[in-house]
Length: 152
Image 1 (cartoon, rainbow, N blue to C red):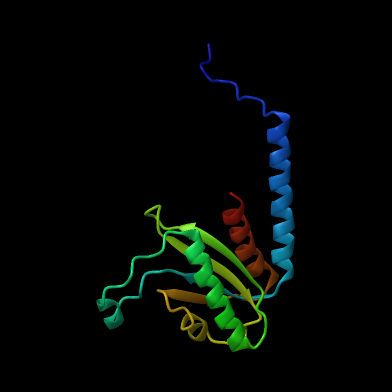
Image 2 (image 1 turned 30 degrees about the horizontal axis):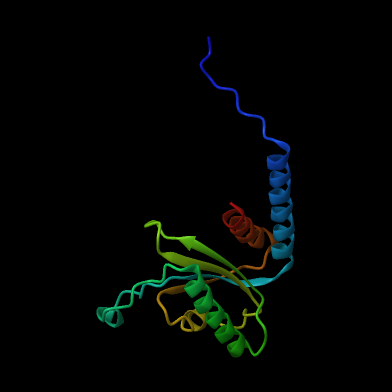
């Protein structure tokens, strides 16, 4: 006798929700893949190590609304520097502590800048900008990671 349980059959509402999630993933992947992304940026709210971090930093925001406000300010700064509207895609993630948030961004239209120039525009903690090689395989790797993280 087997003690394995049969999986419950999803009802019609669950099946429809699954189809809608899959459709969202496909549409998002197509939109992301059509852009020529310049940088993958990670933003945190913890100051980088060094003499500047010796002062007592404010606690990192735990509210998505506060994080979103700061990210919008960062994108505006990048746009002012580029002198144009900068296409971007944002994901918020929790740190390993389960509470603090950090941000991942895909940014287009900034290939003319060095990573350190984009990093310097983030005043609320550590920033890391990685140039994206615009080869289709490279873009696909970033896009699939971003879509997977965003849709779960």
